[in-house]
Image (tube, rainbow, N blue to C red; front, side, top):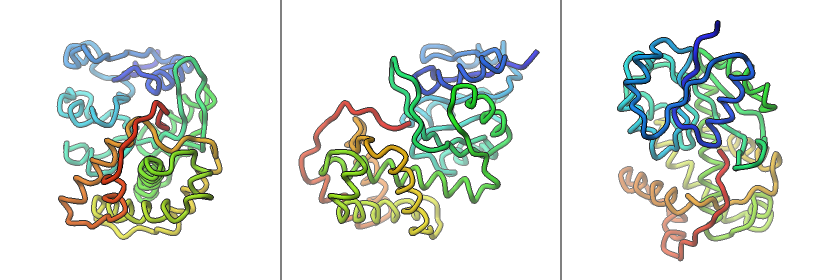
Length: 264
C-alpha cells in the first residue's frame, strides 16, 4: 500500500497533481483553506510527500503553520519562488518544480514546455504527472534548479509587467514591442540578482524565455495579477535601492485589469 500524498490547496493546479498520484495508486489527502493542518497531520504523520499548491501570496503563511512532521516532505511549485523563500523557514531540501503548464476550470492542462523539478521526490513527480500528459524534466543539481526558477520569474514578470503597457500575447510582445520587453527584462534581472545574490547568465536566460515563448506563442501577457506583481517588484527595488526605471515608468501610467489567467 502506497503512503498518502497530501495536497495543500486543491485549486486547478493542485488538482492536476492529485489526479496524477491517484492514477499511480496513491491515496490523496486534500487540505482545504478552512482545515487545520495540525489535525490532518495527526492522522497522516508520514505521507509520501506534502504538495504545497497554494498561491504565491499564501505561501509564507502556509509554511509558517506547517506541522513539523511534514517539513522534510515538501513539494513547492509557486511562481516567483527562489531558495530564500524556503530557507527563511528553515527548510533545507524541499522538492521544487517549476510549473510550465496552465490549467483552467473545465479544460485539460495546456503544456508550454516541460516542467523542471529537483529534490528527493522529483522522479516520482515526473512519474505521476506523466499519467496526466504533463512532461517533467528531473534536474541534476541545485544550480540547475536556481537557473530554472529565475527563468520562470523572468518569463512571468517580463510578460506580465510589459503586458500592462503592451497587452497582447508573448509573440506580439517580442516582435512588436521588443525594446519594451528587453527593458523590462533588464529590470527584472536586476531584481533577481539582488534576490539571489548571484550574477546571472542573462543571455542564457533570455534564450530560455524565448524557448518558452515558442512553446505557446499565443499566451496572453497580462494576467490578472500583473499590477500586484509590479507593485511587489517595486517594493523589492525600493528595499534594494535599485532604479528599475522602466518598471517605475509603467507603474506611473494607468494599471488596467484583466481576466486572462496566469500561467502556473
